[in-house]
Figure 1 (tube, rainbow, N blue to C red):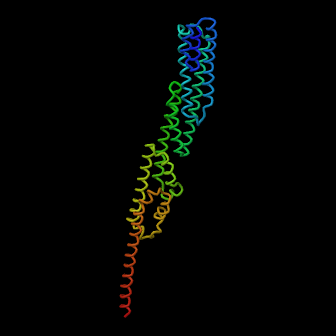
Figure 2 (spheres, rainbow, N blue to C red):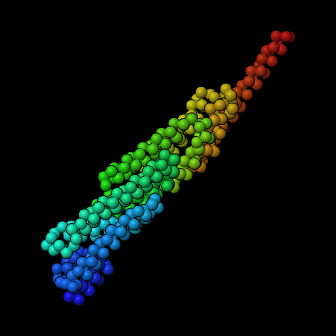
Figure 3 (tube, rainbow, N blue to C red):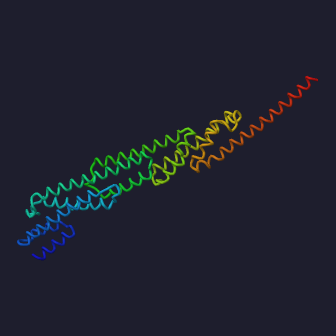
Length: 302
Protein backbone atom coordinates (compact mmCIF):
# COMPACT_ATOMS: atom_id res chain seq x y z
CA UNK A 1 0.00 0.00 0.00
CA UNK A 2 2.78 2.43 0.90
CA UNK A 3 4.55 1.71 -2.37
CA UNK A 4 1.33 2.39 -4.31
CA UNK A 5 0.81 5.64 -2.41
CA UNK A 6 4.41 6.61 -3.13
CA UNK A 7 3.88 5.93 -6.85
CA UNK A 8 0.69 7.99 -6.79
CA UNK A 9 2.52 10.92 -5.18
CA UNK A 10 5.30 10.76 -7.81
CA UNK A 11 2.68 10.84 -10.57
CA UNK A 12 1.09 13.89 -9.01
CA UNK A 13 4.46 15.64 -8.87
CA UNK A 14 4.67 15.18 -12.64
CA UNK A 15 1.04 16.32 -13.05
CA UNK A 16 0.13 12.85 -14.33
CA UNK A 17 -3.31 13.04 -12.76
CA UNK A 18 -4.90 10.16 -14.69
CA UNK A 19 -2.15 7.74 -13.66
CA UNK A 20 -2.56 8.87 -10.07
CA UNK A 21 -6.37 8.45 -10.14
CA UNK A 22 -6.04 4.98 -11.64
CA UNK A 23 -4.02 3.94 -8.57
CA UNK A 24 -6.85 4.87 -6.20
CA UNK A 25 -8.50 1.54 -6.92
CA UNK A 26 -5.47 -0.24 -5.50
CA UNK A 27 -5.62 1.60 -2.19
CA UNK A 28 -7.68 1.09 0.92
CA UNK A 29 -8.00 2.98 4.22
CA UNK A 30 -6.19 4.73 5.76
CA UNK A 31 -4.14 5.40 2.60
CA UNK A 32 -7.17 5.97 0.38
CA UNK A 33 -8.42 9.10 2.16
CA UNK A 34 -4.99 10.71 2.06
CA UNK A 35 -4.51 9.80 -1.60
CA UNK A 36 -7.90 11.25 -2.47
CA UNK A 37 -6.99 14.55 -0.79
CA UNK A 38 -3.70 14.66 -2.70
CA UNK A 39 -5.41 14.08 -6.05
CA UNK A 40 -8.03 16.77 -5.38
CA UNK A 41 -5.33 19.18 -4.19
CA UNK A 42 -3.27 18.58 -7.34
CA UNK A 43 -6.28 19.17 -9.59
CA UNK A 44 -7.15 22.37 -7.76
CA UNK A 45 -3.54 23.53 -8.04
CA UNK A 46 -3.60 22.91 -11.79
CA UNK A 47 -6.84 24.86 -12.10
CA UNK A 48 -5.37 27.81 -10.17
CA UNK A 49 -2.20 27.60 -12.26
CA UNK A 50 -3.95 27.70 -15.62
CA UNK A 51 -6.18 30.54 -14.42
CA UNK A 52 -3.20 32.61 -13.25
CA UNK A 53 -1.30 31.98 -16.48
CA UNK A 54 -4.29 32.92 -18.63
CA UNK A 55 -4.88 36.11 -16.64
CA UNK A 56 -1.25 37.16 -17.08
CA UNK A 57 -1.38 36.97 -20.88
CA UNK A 58 -0.57 40.28 -22.56
CA UNK A 59 0.25 41.64 -26.01
CA UNK A 60 3.89 40.61 -25.69
CA UNK A 61 3.32 37.07 -24.40
CA UNK A 62 5.40 34.48 -26.25
CA UNK A 63 4.24 31.22 -27.75
CA UNK A 64 5.64 29.44 -24.67
CA UNK A 65 2.99 31.09 -22.49
CA UNK A 66 0.19 29.81 -24.74
CA UNK A 67 1.80 26.40 -25.06
CA UNK A 68 1.98 26.02 -21.27
CA UNK A 69 -1.68 26.95 -20.90
CA UNK A 70 -2.70 24.52 -23.62
CA UNK A 71 -0.69 21.73 -21.98
CA UNK A 72 -2.32 22.25 -18.59
CA UNK A 73 -5.76 22.43 -20.20
CA UNK A 74 -5.07 19.15 -21.96
CA UNK A 75 -4.25 17.51 -18.65
CA UNK A 76 -7.38 18.91 -17.03
CA UNK A 77 -9.58 18.00 -19.99
CA UNK A 78 -8.24 14.44 -20.21
CA UNK A 79 -8.61 14.02 -16.46
CA UNK A 80 -12.16 15.30 -16.61
CA UNK A 81 -13.05 12.77 -19.30
CA UNK A 82 -11.39 10.03 -17.29
CA UNK A 83 -13.38 10.95 -14.21
CA UNK A 84 -16.67 10.71 -16.12
CA UNK A 85 -16.14 6.95 -16.27
CA UNK A 86 -17.28 5.74 -12.85
CA UNK A 87 -15.39 2.49 -13.34
CA UNK A 88 -12.21 4.52 -13.39
CA UNK A 89 -13.08 6.93 -10.61
CA UNK A 90 -14.99 4.46 -8.41
CA UNK A 91 -16.55 7.56 -6.80
CA UNK A 92 -13.24 8.33 -5.10
CA UNK A 93 -13.37 11.93 -6.39
CA UNK A 94 -15.99 14.35 -5.08
CA UNK A 95 -19.00 14.78 -7.36
CA UNK A 96 -18.61 18.52 -8.04
CA UNK A 97 -14.94 18.32 -9.00
CA UNK A 98 -15.68 17.49 -12.64
CA UNK A 99 -17.96 20.52 -13.03
CA UNK A 100 -15.29 22.69 -11.42
CA UNK A 101 -12.74 21.53 -13.97
CA UNK A 102 -15.18 22.23 -16.79
CA UNK A 103 -15.78 25.77 -15.56
CA UNK A 104 -12.06 26.44 -15.28
CA UNK A 105 -11.43 25.15 -18.79
CA UNK A 106 -14.13 27.46 -20.13
CA UNK A 107 -12.65 30.41 -18.23
CA UNK A 108 -9.15 29.69 -19.54
CA UNK A 109 -10.46 29.46 -23.10
CA UNK A 110 -12.26 32.79 -22.74
CA UNK A 111 -9.15 34.52 -21.37
CA UNK A 112 -6.92 33.12 -24.11
CA UNK A 113 -9.26 34.22 -26.91
CA UNK A 114 -9.80 37.62 -25.33
CA UNK A 115 -6.04 38.14 -25.38
CA UNK A 116 -5.72 36.92 -28.98
CA UNK A 117 -8.44 39.31 -30.12
CA UNK A 118 -6.60 42.23 -28.49
CA UNK A 119 -3.45 41.22 -30.35
CA UNK A 120 -5.38 41.19 -33.61
CA UNK A 121 -6.88 44.61 -32.87
CA UNK A 122 -3.36 45.97 -32.32
CA UNK A 123 -2.25 44.46 -35.64
CA UNK A 124 -5.27 46.01 -37.36
CA UNK A 125 -4.33 49.41 -35.93
CA UNK A 126 -0.77 49.05 -37.25
CA UNK A 127 -2.08 48.15 -40.71
CA UNK A 128 -4.12 51.37 -40.91
CA UNK A 129 -1.08 53.35 -39.69
CA UNK A 130 1.00 51.74 -42.49
CA UNK A 131 3.31 50.16 -39.91
CA UNK A 132 3.84 47.14 -42.11
CA UNK A 133 6.90 45.81 -40.31
CA UNK A 134 5.09 45.82 -36.97
CA UNK A 135 2.01 44.28 -38.60
CA UNK A 136 3.82 41.40 -40.26
CA UNK A 137 6.08 40.81 -37.28
CA UNK A 138 3.07 40.67 -34.95
CA UNK A 139 1.22 38.36 -37.34
CA UNK A 140 4.24 36.05 -37.41
CA UNK A 141 4.34 35.88 -33.61
CA UNK A 142 0.57 35.43 -33.52
CA UNK A 143 0.76 32.47 -35.90
CA UNK A 144 3.47 30.90 -33.73
CA UNK A 145 1.27 31.34 -30.66
CA UNK A 146 -1.87 29.79 -32.11
CA UNK A 147 0.12 26.93 -33.65
CA UNK A 148 0.28 25.37 -30.19
CA UNK A 149 -3.45 25.85 -29.57
CA UNK A 150 -6.21 23.53 -30.70
CA UNK A 151 -9.34 23.17 -28.59
CA UNK A 152 -8.71 26.55 -26.91
CA UNK A 153 -9.07 28.51 -30.14
CA UNK A 154 -12.66 29.51 -30.92
CA UNK A 155 -14.11 30.13 -34.40
CA UNK A 156 -14.73 33.82 -33.72
CA UNK A 157 -10.99 34.36 -33.18
CA UNK A 158 -10.11 32.32 -36.27
CA UNK A 159 -12.55 34.38 -38.36
CA UNK A 160 -11.08 37.64 -37.08
CA UNK A 161 -7.58 36.48 -38.04
CA UNK A 162 -8.81 35.56 -41.55
CA UNK A 163 -10.34 39.03 -41.89
CA UNK A 164 -7.07 40.65 -40.79
CA UNK A 165 -5.19 38.74 -43.51
CA UNK A 166 -7.68 39.93 -46.12
CA UNK A 167 -7.59 43.49 -44.82
CA UNK A 168 -3.79 43.60 -44.93
CA UNK A 169 -3.73 42.47 -48.55
CA UNK A 170 -6.53 44.90 -49.41
CA UNK A 171 -4.68 47.77 -47.73
CA UNK A 172 -1.44 47.03 -49.60
CA UNK A 173 -3.35 46.89 -52.90
CA UNK A 174 -4.94 50.23 -52.05
CA UNK A 175 -1.55 51.79 -51.37
CA UNK A 176 -0.22 50.35 -54.61
CA UNK A 177 -3.07 52.02 -56.52
CA UNK A 178 -2.65 55.35 -54.71
CA UNK A 179 1.08 55.62 -55.35
CA UNK A 180 0.93 54.61 -58.99
CA UNK A 181 -1.85 57.13 -59.69
CA UNK A 182 -0.42 60.13 -57.84
CA UNK A 183 0.45 63.33 -59.72
CA UNK A 184 4.16 64.09 -59.97
CA UNK A 185 4.02 66.98 -57.52
CA UNK A 186 2.31 64.76 -54.94
CA UNK A 187 5.41 62.57 -54.61
CA UNK A 188 7.04 65.43 -52.73
CA UNK A 189 4.24 65.34 -50.15
CA UNK A 190 4.09 61.53 -50.07
CA UNK A 191 7.67 60.37 -50.79
CA UNK A 192 7.80 57.01 -52.50
CA UNK A 193 11.22 56.46 -50.94
CA UNK A 194 9.64 56.52 -47.45
CA UNK A 195 7.05 53.96 -48.51
CA UNK A 196 9.72 51.66 -49.95
CA UNK A 197 11.67 51.85 -46.69
CA UNK A 198 8.62 50.49 -44.88
CA UNK A 199 7.95 47.82 -47.49
CA UNK A 200 11.58 46.69 -47.52
CA UNK A 201 11.40 45.86 -43.81
CA UNK A 202 8.91 43.10 -44.63
CA UNK A 203 10.45 41.85 -47.87
CA UNK A 204 9.76 38.30 -46.72
CA UNK A 205 6.09 38.77 -47.65
CA UNK A 206 5.23 37.81 -51.24
CA UNK A 207 2.27 40.23 -51.18
CA UNK A 208 4.57 43.12 -50.25
CA UNK A 209 7.30 42.17 -52.74
CA UNK A 210 4.76 41.92 -55.54
CA UNK A 211 3.18 45.29 -54.70
CA UNK A 212 6.59 46.96 -54.44
CA UNK A 213 7.66 45.67 -57.86
CA UNK A 214 4.42 46.81 -59.50
CA UNK A 215 4.74 50.28 -57.99
CA UNK A 216 8.36 50.53 -59.14
CA UNK A 217 7.57 49.52 -62.73
CA UNK A 218 4.47 51.70 -63.02
CA UNK A 219 6.08 54.85 -61.58
CA UNK A 220 9.12 54.44 -63.84
CA UNK A 221 6.87 53.95 -66.86
CA UNK A 222 4.80 57.00 -65.94
CA UNK A 223 7.85 59.30 -65.87
CA UNK A 224 9.27 57.96 -69.13
CA UNK A 225 5.90 58.25 -70.91
CA UNK A 226 5.42 61.82 -69.72
CA UNK A 227 8.87 62.82 -71.00
CA UNK A 228 8.02 61.31 -74.39
CA UNK A 229 4.72 63.19 -74.39
CA UNK A 230 6.41 66.52 -73.58
CA UNK A 231 9.00 65.93 -76.25
CA UNK A 232 6.36 65.06 -78.84
CA UNK A 233 4.34 68.17 -78.01
CA UNK A 234 7.43 70.31 -78.35
CA UNK A 235 7.07 71.51 -74.78
CA UNK A 236 10.77 72.24 -74.68
CA UNK A 237 10.52 74.61 -77.63
CA UNK A 238 7.59 76.46 -76.09
CA UNK A 239 8.89 77.17 -72.62
CA UNK A 240 12.25 75.48 -72.50
CA UNK A 241 13.11 73.47 -69.41
CA UNK A 242 10.84 75.78 -67.41
CA UNK A 243 7.76 73.89 -68.61
CA UNK A 244 5.53 73.39 -65.53
CA UNK A 245 4.97 69.66 -66.03
CA UNK A 246 8.66 69.10 -66.57
CA UNK A 247 9.57 71.12 -63.48
CA UNK A 248 7.14 69.09 -61.36
CA UNK A 249 8.70 65.88 -62.55
CA UNK A 250 12.24 67.15 -62.05
CA UNK A 251 11.58 68.39 -58.52
CA UNK A 252 9.92 65.12 -57.50
CA UNK A 253 12.91 62.95 -58.46
CA UNK A 254 14.55 63.33 -55.04
CA UNK A 255 11.45 61.86 -53.38
CA UNK A 256 11.76 58.62 -55.37
CA UNK A 257 13.72 55.56 -54.25
CA UNK A 258 17.32 55.78 -55.51
CA UNK A 259 16.82 52.73 -57.76
CA UNK A 260 14.05 54.52 -59.69
CA UNK A 261 15.79 57.89 -59.65
CA UNK A 262 18.97 56.42 -61.14
CA UNK A 263 17.00 54.55 -63.80
CA UNK A 264 15.39 57.84 -64.88
CA UNK A 265 18.64 59.80 -65.11
CA UNK A 266 19.24 58.75 -68.74
CA UNK A 267 15.68 59.62 -69.78
CA UNK A 268 15.91 63.10 -68.26
CA UNK A 269 19.39 63.63 -69.66
CA UNK A 270 18.20 62.68 -73.16
CA UNK A 271 15.23 65.02 -72.89
CA UNK A 272 17.44 67.94 -71.85
CA UNK A 273 19.97 67.22 -74.60
CA UNK A 274 17.13 67.07 -77.12
CA UNK A 275 15.91 70.45 -75.90
CA UNK A 276 19.38 71.97 -76.23
CA UNK A 277 19.74 70.65 -79.77
CA UNK A 278 16.31 71.97 -80.74
CA UNK A 279 17.08 75.32 -79.15
CA UNK A 280 20.39 75.51 -81.03
CA UNK A 281 18.72 74.66 -84.34
CA UNK A 282 16.00 77.20 -83.69
CA UNK A 283 18.57 79.85 -82.84
CA UNK A 284 20.52 79.10 -86.03
CA UNK A 285 17.33 79.26 -88.08
CA UNK A 286 16.38 82.57 -86.50
CA UNK A 287 19.83 84.04 -87.20
CA UNK A 288 19.59 82.91 -90.81
CA UNK A 289 16.17 84.51 -91.22
CA UNK A 290 17.41 87.76 -89.67
CA UNK A 291 20.42 87.88 -91.96
CA UNK A 292 18.27 87.27 -95.03
CA UNK A 293 15.82 89.91 -93.88
CA UNK A 294 18.65 92.40 -93.34
CA UNK A 295 20.09 91.77 -96.80
CA UNK A 296 16.68 92.12 -98.46
CA UNK A 297 15.95 95.27 -96.49
CA UNK A 298 19.22 96.88 -97.46
CA UNK A 299 18.62 95.99 -101.09
CA UNK A 300 15.23 97.70 -100.97
CA UNK A 301 16.75 100.84 -99.46
CA UNK A 302 19.36 101.04 -102.18
